[in-house]
Length: 397
Image (cartoon, rainbow, N blue to C red; front, side, top):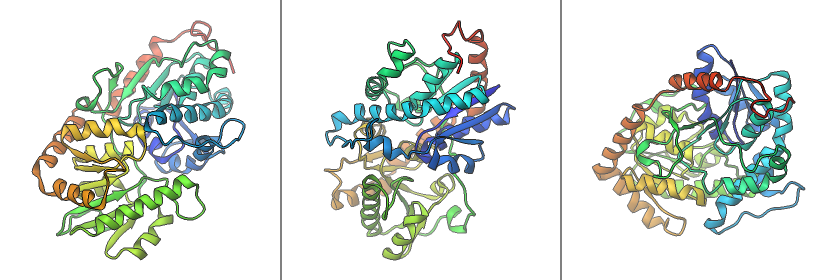
């Protein structure tokens, strides 16, 4: 069986799909993962065959419309989900032809797309093969999908579709305790770490004498020639690191190497750089970060309490559910003063209830079906939907 995985424009989207893709390869299936060009190296870095579906970086879709005119992200959190859907819709429209050409040369039996990779569903519809939607994280797409549907109206009309294609199978990695009550039916799967690796140093897998706090703003951070979004992410990370470094704790800053040197120069006695989170989080007492979905799930998997500072509206609901569960504290940008941040860190490090709840969540995740079990579900959906492309409304590329 041939399985095409469609990732997005960031390393996190690759890490989210990699466990299932790796399990499928281990079961003897052929696998290719497509991503935007500047993330192809990440796909190869986790050991998967990689192809580029566009040379444009993710920022082009966020900050430009289809004609290349500038687009300004909304400041109102209520408008951000639809905006997110629209720029993911632009990415889908820009990548569909490249994916179709790939499918002409290497025809998949099933297409697996990440949560907002809407091109996966359109491609599967065009080919007449099953479409599997694979959640990247615990962020629900209910409010995001309408924006994508609006942006993709020309493509949907072309395919004769009234709306976004419904998946033949939905795989959800959100722990059951954190799923919204109205969440769509899904096949659960344990979220396993799949980040790129590097040579380990002893401090990465051993604990020190002081509490260890991991600080991160994700993989898309730059302080020189990046976009405004990347520079803002760097300033967020730098300020956060300065605030956490003032605590009596050992600080690990998980960040790309291109910014780590500056952080090490400014902050004494910190570890900064690209670190394998699956290893390092096991030695941490707290994660403080931007509330990125995959990073947050990795900390859940490791049983680590979290201080989450969502900078984007779509991250608010899942972080609040984690806080309500008792394994985290979440602060909005307006709430995240230096005093409130320090107070929250101290509470998370000293009050046992947070660690107890984080440990319980990790145990819940470990009881969920592993990726290897979901390979069987992929096989079943292909068998169940086997038939002519005409029967499924497919269009030969």
